Length: 86
Image 1 (cartoon, rainbow, N blue to C red):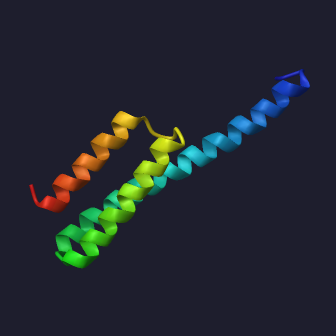
Image 2: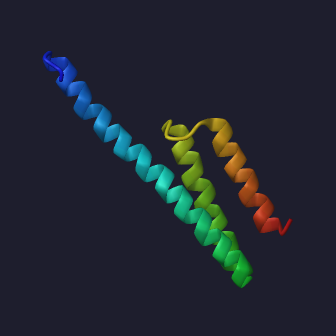
Protein backbone atom coordinates (compact mmCIF):
# COMPACT_ATOMS: atom_id res chain seq x y z
CA UNK A 1 0.00 0.00 0.00
CA UNK A 2 1.26 3.46 -0.85
CA UNK A 3 2.36 5.67 2.02
CA UNK A 4 3.42 8.73 0.05
CA UNK A 5 0.75 11.21 -1.00
CA UNK A 6 1.93 11.39 -4.63
CA UNK A 7 1.88 7.59 -4.90
CA UNK A 8 -1.74 7.58 -3.75
CA UNK A 9 -2.57 10.15 -6.44
CA UNK A 10 -0.79 8.08 -9.09
CA UNK A 11 -2.78 4.99 -8.09
CA UNK A 12 -6.01 6.90 -8.76
CA UNK A 13 -4.73 8.32 -12.04
CA UNK A 14 -3.58 4.89 -13.21
CA UNK A 15 -6.94 3.35 -12.34
CA UNK A 16 -8.77 6.00 -14.39
CA UNK A 17 -6.40 5.51 -17.32
CA UNK A 18 -6.84 1.74 -17.17
CA UNK A 19 -10.64 2.12 -17.34
CA UNK A 20 -10.36 4.52 -20.28
CA UNK A 21 -8.09 2.11 -22.15
CA UNK A 22 -10.53 -0.71 -21.42
CA UNK A 23 -13.37 1.39 -22.85
CA UNK A 24 -11.44 1.95 -26.07
CA UNK A 25 -10.50 -1.71 -26.50
CA UNK A 26 -13.98 -2.93 -25.63
CA UNK A 27 -15.63 -0.50 -28.05
CA UNK A 28 -13.28 -1.54 -30.86
CA UNK A 29 -14.12 -5.21 -30.25
CA UNK A 30 -17.85 -4.44 -30.26
CA UNK A 31 -17.56 -2.46 -33.49
CA UNK A 32 -15.63 -5.29 -35.13
CA UNK A 33 -18.42 -7.70 -34.23
CA UNK A 34 -21.00 -5.25 -35.60
CA UNK A 35 -19.02 -4.94 -38.83
CA UNK A 36 -18.94 -8.73 -39.20
CA UNK A 37 -22.72 -8.97 -38.77
CA UNK A 38 -23.30 -6.06 -41.14
CA UNK A 39 -21.12 -7.67 -43.82
CA UNK A 40 -23.17 -10.86 -43.44
CA UNK A 41 -26.35 -8.83 -44.05
CA UNK A 42 -24.84 -7.25 -47.15
CA UNK A 43 -26.13 -3.65 -47.12
CA UNK A 44 -23.38 -1.58 -48.76
CA UNK A 45 -24.26 1.78 -47.19
CA UNK A 46 -24.48 0.31 -43.71
CA UNK A 47 -21.20 -1.58 -44.18
CA UNK A 48 -19.43 1.63 -45.18
CA UNK A 49 -20.82 3.51 -42.17
CA UNK A 50 -19.81 0.76 -39.74
CA UNK A 51 -16.33 0.54 -41.28
CA UNK A 52 -15.82 4.30 -41.03
CA UNK A 53 -16.89 4.32 -37.37
CA UNK A 54 -14.59 1.39 -36.58
CA UNK A 55 -11.59 3.07 -38.21
CA UNK A 56 -12.26 6.27 -36.26
CA UNK A 57 -12.34 4.39 -32.95
CA UNK A 58 -9.20 2.45 -33.80
CA UNK A 59 -7.39 5.69 -34.64
CA UNK A 60 -8.53 7.26 -31.36
CA UNK A 61 -7.40 4.23 -29.39
CA UNK A 62 -3.97 4.29 -31.02
CA UNK A 63 -3.60 8.05 -30.57
CA UNK A 64 -4.41 7.81 -26.86
CA UNK A 65 -2.08 4.86 -26.30
CA UNK A 66 -4.82 2.36 -25.51
CA UNK A 67 -3.67 0.28 -28.46
CA UNK A 68 -0.25 -0.11 -30.06
CA UNK A 69 0.01 1.57 -33.45
CA UNK A 70 0.93 -1.70 -35.18
CA UNK A 71 -2.04 -3.47 -33.61
CA UNK A 72 -4.25 -0.61 -34.77
CA UNK A 73 -2.90 -0.87 -38.31
CA UNK A 74 -3.46 -4.63 -38.28
CA UNK A 75 -7.08 -4.26 -37.13
CA UNK A 76 -7.76 -1.60 -39.76
CA UNK A 77 -6.27 -3.85 -42.42
CA UNK A 78 -8.39 -6.80 -41.30
CA UNK A 79 -11.50 -4.63 -41.37
CA UNK A 80 -10.66 -3.37 -44.87
CA UNK A 81 -10.21 -6.94 -46.12
CA UNK A 82 -13.54 -7.90 -44.56
CA UNK A 83 -15.30 -4.99 -46.28
CA UNK A 84 -13.60 -5.82 -49.59
CA UNK A 85 -14.88 -9.38 -49.34
CA UNK A 86 -11.60 -11.26 -49.27
